[in-house]
Image 1 (cartoon, rainbow, N blue to C red):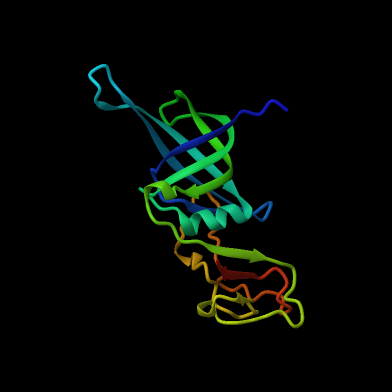
Image 2 (tube, rainbow, N blue to C red):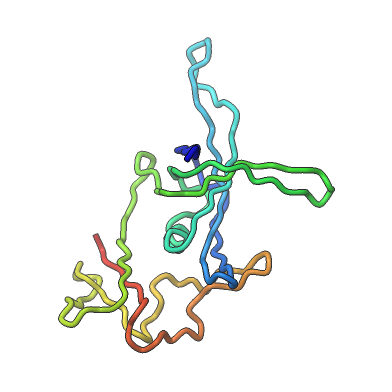
Length: 184
Protein backbone atom coordinates (compact mmCIF):
# COMPACT_ATOMS: atom_id res chain seq x y z
CA UNK A 1 0.00 0.00 0.00
CA UNK A 2 1.08 3.53 -0.67
CA UNK A 3 -0.95 5.34 1.97
CA UNK A 4 0.34 8.67 3.24
CA UNK A 5 0.22 8.69 7.05
CA UNK A 6 0.44 12.04 8.84
CA UNK A 7 0.44 13.33 12.39
CA UNK A 8 -0.96 16.81 12.97
CA UNK A 9 -0.88 18.84 16.16
CA UNK A 10 -3.28 21.76 16.41
CA UNK A 11 -6.58 23.00 17.79
CA UNK A 12 -10.04 21.65 17.07
CA UNK A 13 -11.69 24.28 14.90
CA UNK A 14 -15.17 22.82 15.32
CA UNK A 15 -17.03 20.59 17.73
CA UNK A 16 -17.50 17.07 16.32
CA UNK A 17 -21.05 16.00 15.48
CA UNK A 18 -22.01 12.34 15.44
CA UNK A 19 -23.67 10.95 12.30
CA UNK A 20 -25.15 7.59 11.40
CA UNK A 21 -24.95 6.06 7.96
CA UNK A 22 -28.33 4.33 8.19
CA UNK A 23 -27.70 2.09 5.18
CA UNK A 24 -24.61 0.57 6.80
CA UNK A 25 -25.54 1.17 10.49
CA UNK A 26 -22.17 2.87 10.90
CA UNK A 27 -21.33 5.84 13.18
CA UNK A 28 -18.92 8.53 12.02
CA UNK A 29 -17.86 12.05 12.89
CA UNK A 30 -15.87 14.87 11.39
CA UNK A 31 -14.30 17.98 12.83
CA UNK A 32 -11.80 20.58 11.65
CA UNK A 33 -8.26 20.98 12.96
CA UNK A 34 -6.14 24.11 12.52
CA UNK A 35 -2.38 23.69 12.67
CA UNK A 36 -0.17 26.77 12.73
CA UNK A 37 3.59 26.39 12.45
CA UNK A 38 5.64 28.57 14.80
CA UNK A 39 9.21 29.40 13.97
CA UNK A 40 12.00 31.82 14.89
CA UNK A 41 12.34 34.57 12.27
CA UNK A 42 15.54 36.29 11.18
CA UNK A 43 15.23 38.76 14.13
CA UNK A 44 15.12 35.90 16.63
CA UNK A 45 11.42 36.41 17.40
CA UNK A 46 8.82 33.65 17.44
CA UNK A 47 6.45 34.06 14.48
CA UNK A 48 3.31 32.28 13.35
CA UNK A 49 3.42 30.75 9.89
CA UNK A 50 0.45 29.93 7.70
CA UNK A 51 -2.41 27.98 9.25
CA UNK A 52 -3.25 24.66 7.59
CA UNK A 53 -6.81 23.38 7.96
CA UNK A 54 -7.65 19.68 7.91
CA UNK A 55 -10.92 17.81 8.17
CA UNK A 56 -10.60 14.82 10.50
CA UNK A 57 -12.89 11.85 10.01
CA UNK A 58 -13.33 9.05 12.57
CA UNK A 59 -15.47 5.92 12.35
CA UNK A 60 -17.29 3.51 14.68
CA UNK A 61 -16.20 3.50 18.33
CA UNK A 62 -13.58 6.18 17.70
CA UNK A 63 -16.38 8.48 16.52
CA UNK A 64 -18.31 7.94 19.76
CA UNK A 65 -15.23 8.65 21.87
CA UNK A 66 -14.22 11.74 19.84
CA UNK A 67 -17.69 13.29 20.24
CA UNK A 68 -17.34 12.97 24.02
CA UNK A 69 -13.69 14.07 24.22
CA UNK A 70 -13.06 16.83 21.67
CA UNK A 71 -14.69 20.26 21.52
CA UNK A 72 -13.91 23.44 19.58
CA UNK A 73 -10.65 25.02 20.79
CA UNK A 74 -9.25 21.87 22.43
CA UNK A 75 -5.61 21.12 21.52
CA UNK A 76 -5.41 17.75 19.73
CA UNK A 77 -2.92 15.42 18.11
CA UNK A 78 -4.29 13.42 15.16
CA UNK A 79 -2.65 10.56 13.26
CA UNK A 80 -4.17 8.97 10.19
CA UNK A 81 -4.28 8.43 6.45
CA UNK A 82 -4.18 11.66 4.42
CA UNK A 83 -6.73 11.88 1.62
CA UNK A 84 -7.92 14.56 -0.78
CA UNK A 85 -11.66 15.30 -0.75
CA UNK A 86 -12.99 16.91 -3.92
CA UNK A 87 -16.46 18.38 -4.50
CA UNK A 88 -18.36 21.01 -6.45
CA UNK A 89 -19.37 24.06 -4.39
CA UNK A 90 -22.74 25.82 -4.48
CA UNK A 91 -21.21 28.35 -6.89
CA UNK A 92 -20.31 25.55 -9.33
CA UNK A 93 -16.57 25.83 -8.61
CA UNK A 94 -14.46 22.73 -8.00
CA UNK A 95 -13.20 22.53 -4.41
CA UNK A 96 -10.68 20.34 -2.65
CA UNK A 97 -9.63 19.83 0.94
CA UNK A 98 -7.32 17.64 2.99
CA UNK A 99 -8.99 14.91 5.05
CA UNK A 100 -7.28 12.82 7.70
CA UNK A 101 -8.99 9.46 8.21
CA UNK A 102 -7.94 9.06 11.83
CA UNK A 103 -6.26 6.04 13.33
CA UNK A 104 -5.54 7.92 16.57
CA UNK A 105 -6.89 11.14 18.10
CA UNK A 106 -5.86 12.53 21.46
CA UNK A 107 -6.16 15.64 23.53
CA UNK A 108 -2.66 17.20 23.69
CA UNK A 109 -1.46 16.77 27.28
CA UNK A 110 1.55 19.03 26.63
CA UNK A 111 -0.87 21.96 26.52
CA UNK A 112 -3.16 21.18 29.44
CA UNK A 113 -4.35 18.65 32.00
CA UNK A 114 -6.16 15.64 30.52
CA UNK A 115 -8.43 13.10 32.22
CA UNK A 116 -9.00 9.62 30.86
CA UNK A 117 -11.91 7.21 31.13
CA UNK A 118 -11.54 3.83 29.45
CA UNK A 119 -14.50 2.52 27.47
CA UNK A 120 -14.62 -1.28 27.42
CA UNK A 121 -16.69 -2.97 24.73
CA UNK A 122 -17.75 -6.57 25.02
CA UNK A 123 -20.38 -8.96 23.72
CA UNK A 124 -21.67 -10.10 27.10
CA UNK A 125 -21.17 -9.38 30.77
CA UNK A 126 -19.57 -12.60 32.09
CA UNK A 127 -21.13 -14.27 35.12
CA UNK A 128 -19.24 -13.24 38.22
CA UNK A 129 -17.71 -10.14 36.58
CA UNK A 130 -16.94 -7.48 39.19
CA UNK A 131 -19.62 -4.79 39.09
CA UNK A 132 -18.87 -1.80 41.31
CA UNK A 133 -19.72 1.89 41.22
CA UNK A 134 -17.53 4.03 38.95
CA UNK A 135 -16.61 6.11 42.00
CA UNK A 136 -14.99 3.00 43.47
CA UNK A 137 -12.62 2.85 40.53
CA UNK A 138 -13.69 -0.64 39.48
CA UNK A 139 -15.46 -2.13 36.51
CA UNK A 140 -18.95 -0.83 35.85
CA UNK A 141 -20.98 -3.07 33.60
CA UNK A 142 -23.94 -1.49 31.88
CA UNK A 143 -27.17 -3.43 31.98
CA UNK A 144 -30.22 -3.11 29.74
CA UNK A 145 -32.17 -0.02 30.76
CA UNK A 146 -29.15 1.83 32.22
CA UNK A 147 -28.75 5.49 31.26
CA UNK A 148 -26.38 5.98 28.33
CA UNK A 149 -23.12 7.27 29.89
CA UNK A 150 -22.27 9.11 26.68
CA UNK A 151 -25.38 11.34 26.66
CA UNK A 152 -25.51 11.50 22.87
CA UNK A 153 -29.06 12.86 22.75
CA UNK A 154 -27.86 16.44 22.12
CA UNK A 155 -26.48 15.80 18.66
CA UNK A 156 -28.16 17.03 15.50
CA UNK A 157 -28.36 15.10 12.22
CA UNK A 158 -26.86 16.50 9.04
CA UNK A 159 -26.89 15.64 5.36
CA UNK A 160 -29.88 13.32 5.71
CA UNK A 161 -28.16 11.14 8.31
CA UNK A 162 -30.17 9.98 11.29
CA UNK A 163 -29.65 11.29 14.80
CA UNK A 164 -27.70 8.76 16.81
CA UNK A 165 -28.78 8.33 20.39
CA UNK A 166 -30.29 5.75 22.69
CA UNK A 167 -33.88 6.94 22.50
CA UNK A 168 -36.14 3.92 22.15
CA UNK A 169 -33.20 1.50 22.16
CA UNK A 170 -33.81 -0.92 24.99
CA UNK A 171 -31.27 -3.45 23.71
CA UNK A 172 -32.00 -7.13 23.43
CA UNK A 173 -32.34 -7.73 27.18
CA UNK A 174 -29.18 -9.83 27.46
CA UNK A 175 -26.65 -7.00 27.71
CA UNK A 176 -25.07 -8.03 24.41
CA UNK A 177 -23.46 -5.06 22.67
CA UNK A 178 -23.75 -2.81 25.72
CA UNK A 179 -20.98 -0.33 26.66
CA UNK A 180 -19.33 0.13 30.00
CA UNK A 181 -17.09 2.79 31.51
CA UNK A 182 -13.97 2.04 33.52
CA UNK A 183 -12.06 4.80 35.29
CA UNK A 184 -8.36 4.42 34.73
